[in-house]
Length: 63
Image 1 (cartoon, helix red, strand yellow):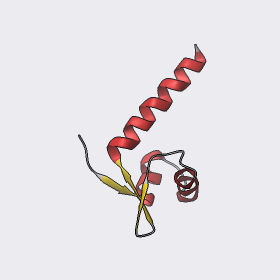
Image 2: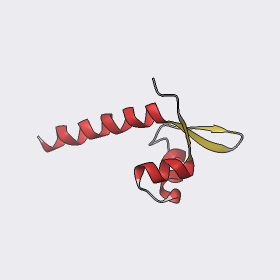
Image 3: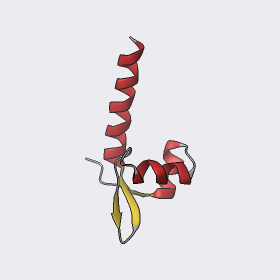
């Protein structure tokens, strides 16, 4: 398992989103993350699972 931890800025770069958009998604619980001392952190493995799940959902809708 990959236990690499990303900051908000790193996740924004990884997902190719604006930091503000990434923050809103995290605050709304739409992407997996957690706060440490008021700062958002994200496990790479959870983000990859989230992307796989959402990719599969969009393929199901296209069928």
